[in-house]
Amino acid sequence: MEQKNKTRFDIPALGICLLFAAGTRLIPHVDNFTPMESVSLFGAAYFSRKWWAFLTPVFIMYITDFVINNTVARPFFTETEGVVWFSNYMIYNALAYVAITSLGILFLQKVSASKVVFLSLTSSVLFFLVTNFGVWMSEVSLYPRSFSGLMMSYTAALPFFRNSMLSTLVFSAMMFGSFSLLKRYFYNTATFAR
Image (cartoon, rainbow, N blue to C red; front, side, top):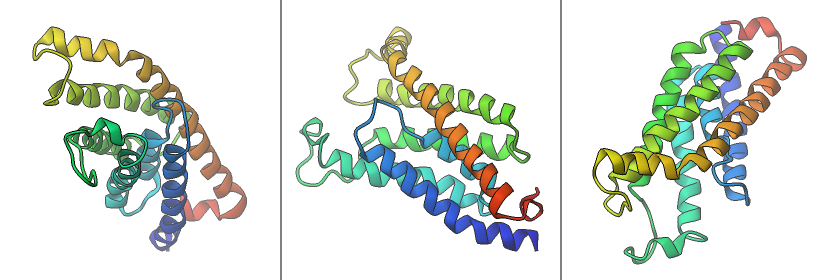
C-alpha cells in the first residue's frame, strides 16, 4: 500500500519539479541562482522510481539549455551552424547532477532539516568542483592545462559559487518545506513514511 501511494505521488511531484525548475531557469535571474541542485536532492529523497531522480535534473538542464543556447546565448556558439543541439559543458553539469542525486539517495532515506542543509551545501561544492573542472578541460578553455590553470578556473568561478550555494539553500528550503506542509495538510503522513 505504501509503495503504491508513493508511486501515485511521483507524477505530480515530478511535474512540479519540471515546471518550477524550468521556469526559474528560463526567466531572467541572477547568475547560477536556480533550483537545479535542489531538484536533484528532492528527487533523490521522494521519487520512488530513483531513475526519475537521476533523469529529472538532466532533462530539465538539457531542455532549458537548448532554449537558452539557441536564443540569448546563441552568439557564444560561433563555431556551430544552425541549431545548437549540444555543448560539451552539458556533460559536466549532468555528471554533477548524477553525483548530487547519488548523495541524496544515500543520505536522505530519512529526511531532516539538518541533512537537507548539509547536503545543499555539499551539493553546491560538488557542482562547483565538477563543472569548473569541465570549464578547465574544455577545448576552448581560457585556462592553461596545468594545476595553476585549474586553480585559476576555480578562482574565477567563486562569485558564481556564492550564488549557487545560496540558491540551493533557498530552493531546498522551499521544496522540502512545501512538501512537508503538503504531507501534513493534504496527505495521510503515514502513507509517505519511509
